[in-house]
Amino acid sequence: MDLLERLARWRTFADDCLDGYPWEVEEFLVDVNSRSTLQELVAASREDRAVDHRLIAAELDTVDGSLRPIFDIEAFPKMSPSEWWLRCVPSYAARDFCREFKSAYGVSIAARSKFVLDVDAMTQLAANGVAPADICLKVAEEQWYVAKRPALLFRACRRSLPMDRSARRALWSWAAGKVSEAGLRAALGK
Image (cartoon, rainbow, N blue to C red; front, side):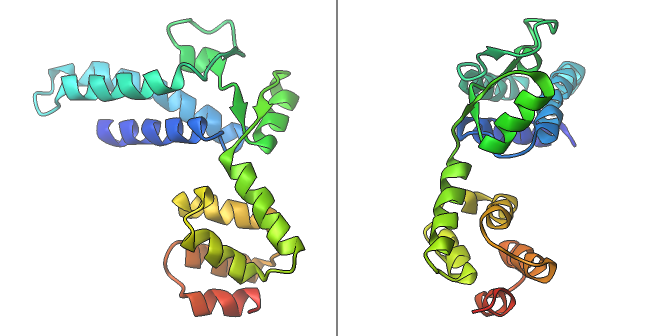
């Protein structure tokens, strides 16, 4: 990845954290380590006249500024305070992340996430007899949080709806825009 791609990835990570990090601890660790790589790339590109360093520095400051207030749990105190993204973790995240982080590192994080709210609502719809395809289509049409990205939608559907491997493949293809609504209905049974 180049500098701008890494900056975009850091921005996406920040958005995920602000909404209550929905992924697993392993992805989180990769994402926070990408901030260190970003720092190195910024320093190494100072000689590159094609890069507008003021713009990149301003964007990085903006993203960091949005994250710092919620990165208020010091989980790894041996890390340098200047690398706050490695030293601290967000004060809230999705339930599964919180359980996994507590188990791995003994640090408690509040379970609060837009992802979890959507998964719980989807689970409730399924419990009320709404067909899985109808749930997926409702979520996408109403632009729920989990509909922001195909991987979030896929993850939410896997957590809330019973599906076999064939249905999961069709769901991913639909979320990625490769299968029609009719194809999704056929694969999920209605």
